[in-house]
Length: 184
Image 1 (cartoon, rainbow, N blue to C red):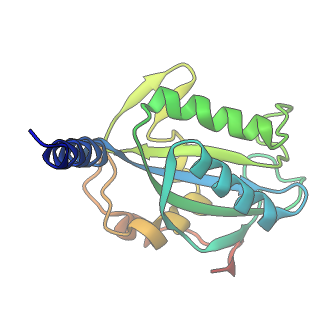
Image 2 (spheres, rainbow, N blue to C red):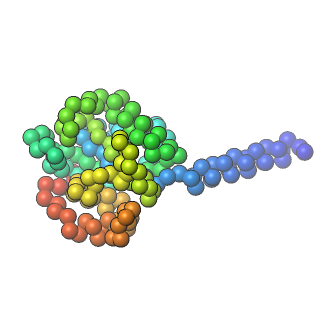
Image 3 (cartoon, one colour):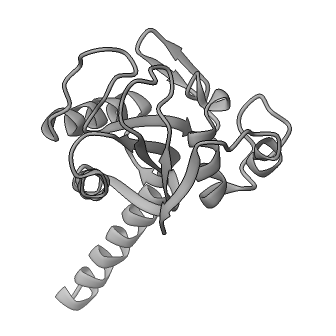
């Protein structure tokens, strides 16, 4: 066989491998939040870090200014949701996210306290995972308007696992007080 045909075969094999990987990529939704330092810059840096860690950004919501949740005596947050594609398993994704948070300077101090960056896995395909340090769907998602509203921006027709209504339908009953668009 001539080298011309061998090279074409290698290209074909590479295309098959690439398309197979794309097909197997998980559809994942993340929520990013920050209330310490330069907030918009923190979100943009987190997006860059995700891309550097085999987590491809597919869609991004608007950025919302939101009131704190869980602990109210702290500055307001900026939050955004992103749809990502990745070959990482949920556990590998969690580990990468924790590494990004640490690299950006997040310190584990108090629950629901101020933070330079917080990245939560909201949904990973339609998987349901219940482990001590990894729960998907996120256990507080349906209690947090600051998570639901940005998700409607990017996945209004998504029906969460164990639910029969789309995010748009679920959001219709959500109290949006304290949530405002910061920028697109």
